[in-house]
Image 1 (cartoon, one colour):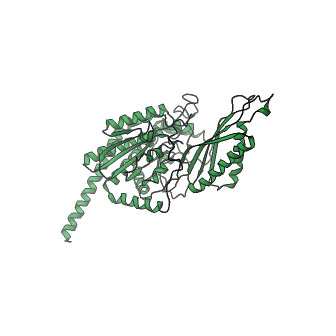
Image 2: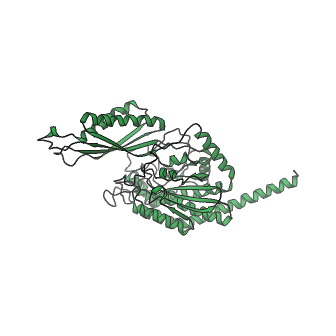
Image 3: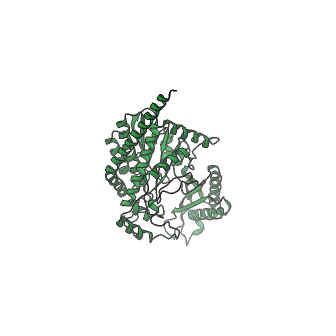
Length: 478
């Protein structure tokens, strides 16, 4: 090839890169100008604080905002009233952005740095999903405008995914084919730091164990009764003994949701709700079988009857290095979170309530954590993991809470409703938007993500442990 032609191509490439950079800077400036509007949306969802499958107002608010931006809304995905998709554009590639908006029971809290419920016993956003769903919608709308302005082919799709907290909404959406045409899906999660890496999550199986006995007077005729509560307590005791004889990475936690009506009545019904987790789904399968035998043993020993309802099951996260590296690049370019003096005062007071002596220092929010190379089974569980086994996907964390804030806590709720949470939300939205823009303009990135996905999934068959005929447990919080 002639030298003059090579030079011309090089100049053309440089011009495209320069224009592309200007386009992205323009998109970021536009996002900064509208950050307050999306902050208001996140605050409204924070105030709604609706639990899984009941997020009627939260879902409607996000749908309305996306529809006003020109997105086509598809509702009731997978038979779930609050599940939806919002799509704009046409053709390939199809980039999906996941959004969540469910709250947790019993965590109601004002956005103040001391324990003060807004409504005693009511739900609260202890995992920051008010920020999650909003940031993802913010990113999708920003990318939609960027695509139109640059006259690019491609499709951007927002996924409104309910009941992440133990309800498995994404599993039923996936079964309905919601992700069948997606090339890459983007995901993030609120956290107490900003960063990403190749850590995974824990596979999870959860179920409600119901025991049925015979009621009788607990004092004058106890021999005529059969205590359902005794059956449940024996099951739980057996599970406690089981803990020593399962892999150390296993996690088992439960609550008693119903234990009887009165001490002087032999309970004829009792119910427990149990979660089991492991970095490996096959290992978790064997642990779950043993837990069921613990329940059967409790029923046998107390002459009661046991039924188990499987509520949810999710996989461990299938990592994807190319997408994760893309997030890391944009996180480092954008930088961390800066607190105002008022926010720092809030953070100092909030941190006085932490029990962990190893809490990261204030100032950690201003940094981007080193790229993590963690192994399997870090942290909790999420139904986003199931999507990661269906399409190439990866996640990152943005600092929406004070360094060291525990998840699923009143402290987390306070941050999620404050300006601290909203600053982290805007950072997340920008990372998602920039990553989507790169994927839409660089086919090689999508090819690399698919190659990594295929290599990591090779030899593994994804099959949800939720029975194919099971309907979404729309009332699992009741």
